[in-house]
Length: 101
Image 1 (tube, helix red, strand yellow):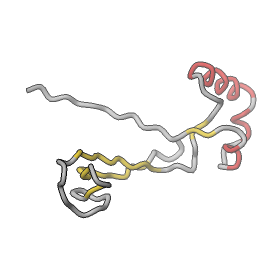
Image 2 (cartoon, rainbow, N blue to C red):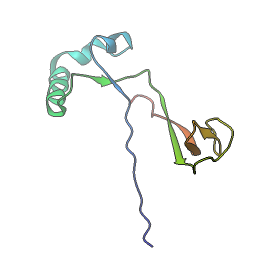
Image 3 (cartoon, one colour):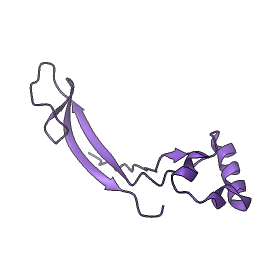
């Protein structure tokens, strides 16, 4: 059997203007050539002008598997526990975004 490898790309959520200013993004990001790049990126993606949210420094990966009907267990978010009525937590990890990205 051939083993498949998958890659998950995760990015900080994006916020717009003026929210970004209140989150500590320099106002200079929204001027000159930087603004032109943001506008071009927004047009290319079909989304509003935005920048990565600097207040988001981590994310959680939670892998769950559907359980058989009438399976019992204790509720929680750690490995082996039930998340709701239909899923068992297989794996959970918190990863940090690199500083300054």
